Each structure stands twice: as C-alpha cells, then as structure tokens.
Length: 138
Image (cartoon, rainbow, N blue to C red; front, side, top):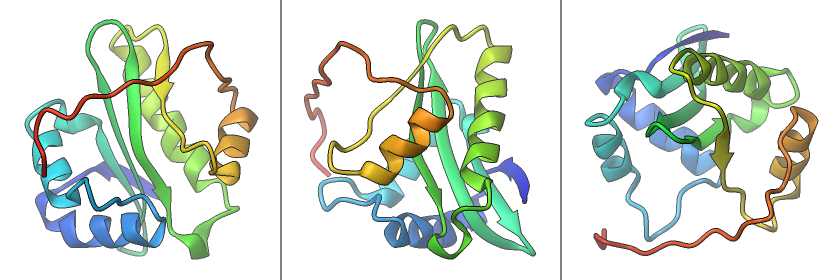
C-alpha cells in the first residue's frame, strides 16, 4: 500500500470508503469534515492506495498537548492485511516528529473489532470520559 497525503480529487473515494466502513453518521457531514480538516494540518490527513484505489484513510491532528486520530478506515475487502497498522504507524511517526507525547482517539463502545485492533497495537483505555459539545450543526 502506498501512503500519501489526501488530495482534493480523493473526496468521493474517501467518503465512499468511510461509508463502507460504517464511519459516517447523519450528524457529521463527511464533506464538511474533509473541508474543515483541509484548513488545519492537512498534511496529517492520509490515504492509502493499492493500484490507484483508495483502500485506507486516517485523519490526525496535534494541538501541542495531545495528538488525535479520526476516520481510520480500511476497505472491508482489504482488512486483515496490516493496512490499518501501516497507516496508523505512519501517522504516529508524523505526530512523534512534531513532538507529540501521546495520542488520543475515540472508539464507539460497541465496535469490538476496532477496540481489539487498537489494543493489539498498544492502545489502552484511559480513565477518562469523552465529552462533547456541538458548536456548529451540520
């Protein structure tokens, strides 16, 4: 898999990937999420492709205290081949190069596959609750 920064022409393929992976929700417009990401550290929005087809994505950021990961997805037909680990490793390298001491991410409580994946690559549950407040309704 070739890992590279997201490009504008990738939008439809990335949104289709997110939909196939069950990452989209009606309250988050994926096109708006992409547009917003492109205004803040766009170099931390990566895609993975095989033979010109986008099969993985990851969106990351670092605000000086913690790194964050969102939208890690691998095409269902490509799972079990180490692609998620590869793109996650790449984003970890990019965050570490910025001096990021810790990465946080959120996983839906009922997503056993994602929880198992993250545990296998060294992520553990923090003794913290995730809170949120919507400032813009999409």
